[in-house]
Image 1 (cartoon, rainbow, N blue to C red):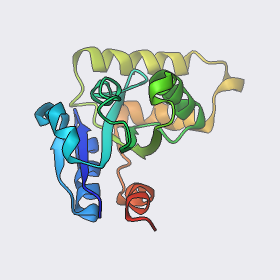
Image 2: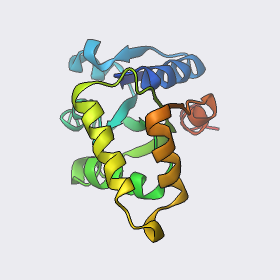
Image 3: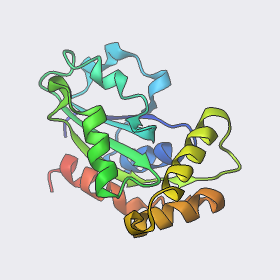
Length: 177
């Protein structure tokens, strides 16, 4: 098997959990982006990067974006983790924000639903969640989708949507199944 590594950037733990599961399934190292040295890219043929979704961006994705020359000829896959990443409009927004530049346009991105615990979210993150909630509440009733209603319910209550089944397509891609 080719040399594979899973690199992740996780703030609240959901992305790390998915990264660890992928590493177990592929029997490969799993490293936090904070502890990864860009020079080590040369040791691997396959790079799997995971980051939480924050204000439409994939947290830590700059590590990949700024290293595309070093990654030429390597297989690079990203997984984005967030509370509403299963919504088509959210996925499109993530693609537009993170993968629109030519050098990263061809990167495959998988989506894994995350978790949200309002008691752990503070500062700017809490402000962003409150702004998102306000935007959804201000929508005309005819424009509110079922996904919007679910998200509105999850903001005050929290939710844990993490499920190992979401790593299956990533694992299949790297096992060649």
